Image 1 (tube, one colour):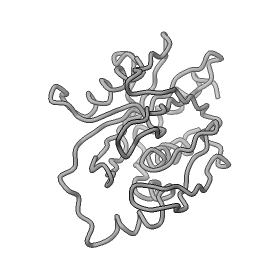
Image 2 (cartoon, rainbow, N blue to C red):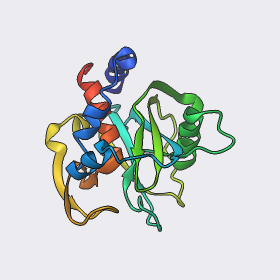
Image 3 (cartoon, rainbow, N blue to C red):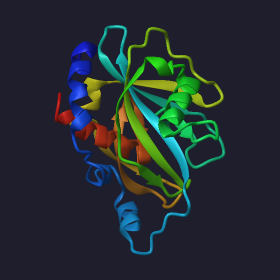
Image 4 (tube, one colour):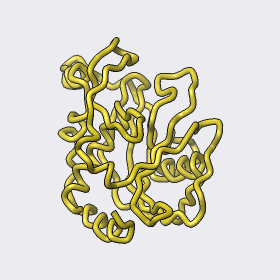
Length: 213
């Protein structure tokens, strides 16, 4: 899809209601849904974080979504596909400032050139005890992305055409921090499996885009 056409249409989602939990649960393992819905489930003073779903033009001026492959490290989100972002720092004015700062640090996107379209539904991630605020933004990408080597192993650039393709939604068996070899709904983009909180965020974005594209 042409980026200019995409830019014109995506602005229409500003006033749309957020699909929220209903869209998240489409990409959530059944046992996780049961846990989150349990009366015994309590958030444990979660840490705050923010991410940016950044849409930008490819070299052929097609609309793309930027994902990153995180480096391998000792942690529950090691080597996973994610949106650029990170935790709230003391110097951040708010969570949007966090998302913009982290996106610049991780992929070199200039904050002043990102047009923020909408804040999305927060997602709580029990294994890491983070509550994450996603944002959706447009970026003209006048300069190449610049990876932060300590955090990012690779860029995963997904065309909007592939992103909206329902055949990209698959089932995978994954060993997680809370279960062994369980069936998990996921996106399959360019051979990468996108699951967990990132897939839940992308599901909400996809539901919004279906209403305007």
